Length: 349
Image (cartoon, rainbow, N blue to C red; front, side, top):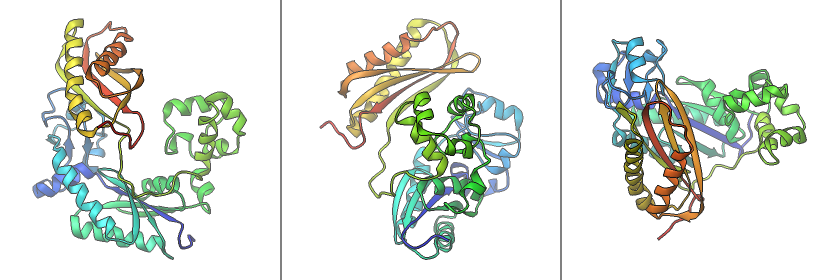
């Protein structure tokens, strides 16, 4: 049992974007819905989200729209409507803030709540009911004694459930799972861990920090082991969420082949991104360029700036330098550029 003062809830909205669209179009309830691009599945683009009815047929986020259409031609395909999702998210976060809790917003569809109650699982069900009543949206809630555990618990709670993961049941629930099941460990890191003989969460938790530090560095190595214990992590904070960076990308209906055309499109994207950067006022320290080659090979290259800046010429030059690191030997179907902020909260006036 969790005692008072140490509970963390992770609220994760179920199939959020698709659920918002179904609320706007009640006639779609019970039908497979796929949201992505401009809603035309014959064009290039990727799936932003799919509801559970569509996921049963193997349609999921980041899948090419054309693939989703081949797999499920009877689905309803809709365009992305970011303002509508932002407004729905705001209503949900307002509900969370109506409870005696510290609320840390993590994005459109998720937030942590730091609470001081004797029965956090009961509170989680109250929160879930209130969100449903006031917004008509379902959420799943993970209950934990750290943010790491609460985040993982919400995955076990899906859909529309509540799940508790604490120090008491951590080994039972997580110990035998692959390291990739941990929040923060992707497939590339999991493969590297496997070369060290560390395939499960319990194996990673038991290894010496020195072993991991040798393979991943003095900071990342011990951090990975801490993830495997479910301990650590920051406290829930009500400070406004600040993204680590901003990005723009574009999928081309006709492949780009001419190098000059590729550079021109990247410059165009960079200038579009500058509008967001100038509005936010956060200086940039790193520029990353993303290229998706035909048929569907995605690669990224980045350049770190000498010092934080909002000067368009320097950011554009960094984007061009990143592009020059690619061997462009195939046609290009997508370009993207991302600017990473120097640090959260810093601003250039």
